Amino acid sequence: MAKAPSAEDIAALGERFSEAIRGTREALGEVSAYVDPAFILEVCTFLRDDPRFQFNLLSDLTGVDLGLDQEPRFEVIYHLYSLPLGHRLRLKAQLPSEEPTIDSVTSIWKTANWHERETFDMFGIVFEGHPDLRRILTPDEFQWHPLRKDFPVRGYDDF
Amino acid sequence: MELDQDQLRERSRPGRPPAQRTIYAEDASGIIDINELKERELGSTMTLSMGPQHPSTHGVLRLELELDGEIVISTKPDIGYLHTGMEKLMEAKKYQSNICITDRMDYLNPMGNNLGYVLAVEKLLQLEIPPRAQCIRVLMCELQRIASHLVWIGTHALDVGAMSVFFYAFDEREKILNMFEDVCGGRMTPSYFRVGGMFQDLPAGFDAKVNRFLSEFPSALEAFDTLLTGNRIFRGRLQGVGVLSAEDAISWGITGPSLRGSGVEHDLRRAEPYSGYENYDFDIPTFPEGDVWARYQVRRQEFRESLKIVRQCIEKMPTGPIKADNDKVVLPDRDDMKTHMDALIHHFLIAADGFKVPEGEVYVAIEGSKGELGYYIISDGSERPFRCHVRGPSFVNLSALPDMVKGSLIADVVAVIGSIDIVLGEIDR
Image (tube, rainbow over all chains, first blue to last red; front, side, top):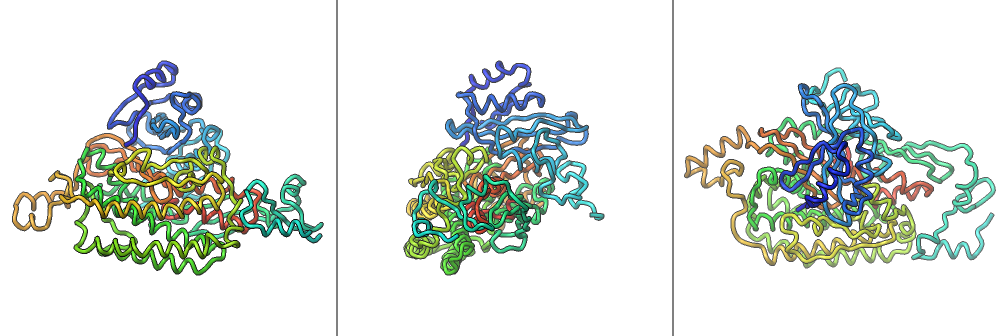
């Protein structure tokens, strides 16, 4: 089973970025850290390069729509994995319902490129600094963001 | 300009190390070294649309290639032709109904998809899986890995011009699919796994069928070696092509056999053992060159490692139940339903209403046949997932393709696509 970084390291991370980390939560052996979207690049660069964390592999990046009545409505989820240390960490950045925007992490992990395009396509979250932010799965002329909770499962007839 | 004797000898020599490989291109002044060409100012380029119906793109993948002569300047993969909104659909369906959706993502590795999904839901439910069910799961996943690699070796060889391997590979795969049919009735889309265990126990005489496969399959592997591994043309097409350094591979998030072909010894079956993989003895083949040939070698060895695990599963298959002991989640046996009132009620409730999963979120990753297959599930406490995201290894591995084929010949693009072993069903979801 996956292991998480030690509690001391998580506490040290919270202290190092007292402004950026809004809290951490551990459940079912997985640790999530809530990160202020403005600091995402800084935190990710630190987590990749710091010898205690060494998160050199971005396992996954995706979005969540928490619901129409929620504010902040969107979350961007980063699943980090460290090949040398074998531990995992989940980062969450919460974004508002109006113009959700966050910095792209493509400069830190190249793999973020397609993940961010998919998240943009599915949720309409804009990744600033992304080299090629186009729709990836739906057609270019598609007008909606299908994984938003207000998009019907059956889609729209007029497409 | 004609090639001189030394150059011709250099080109035809098998087993060239990648660094010394010279690719020649032809332009108006004759045959020149590609590195020379890259330094020159490029003239007009041609854009070629390859696919989506091209057989070597393994499904409906379209590549927009910018070419200078035969040299690939840039590649833009265009995906989404198979996009069916599976993640959206999973939010609308109950947990147990989603198992058959996972089958249809990576349709060459459905058992692995089933396993990743049920492990994630079982982690949310905190279910204890009996050892026999765990062992059956490992057995199925390893047979599936062999079947998936067989499709890979057949199509990969076909792409680079070795046609006959395809028929031998599919012949062997047929034997595995027949075993799946015996077990659960399904071949391509088995849906054999259930949250909490398996749909039914292995049929009588299944051991004998697996044992026969174990004794016959090594001779097929020898045939592949004769047809491909020792084939100079095949080696020439693969060696030094599509090189990816370990550093780049990690930055691109590449996992599975493709990462091991870049010399990184990483396998989630060893790093984060699940479903009892810590009890099996197997090696992790790793090759450092990072080219198509290295990735071929890794998968070639993985056939043998999977066979080892299958053999161990059959030898030490535990007895006992195949479902977890939880009436609220696991469907009762048919016999119990005919004799016990409460079993009938539980069956009705699970089939009609589904089961509720406690609030929470999990990310569970397994080693699929193509790399890290991750399921991220958020539960809001109801009987349907609030969000289910699938981290498909094919999606991530394909994103590195433009880097791998830059500056190579257009014929090498097909070799590289074959070597990263993609399935478009999983990429588009």
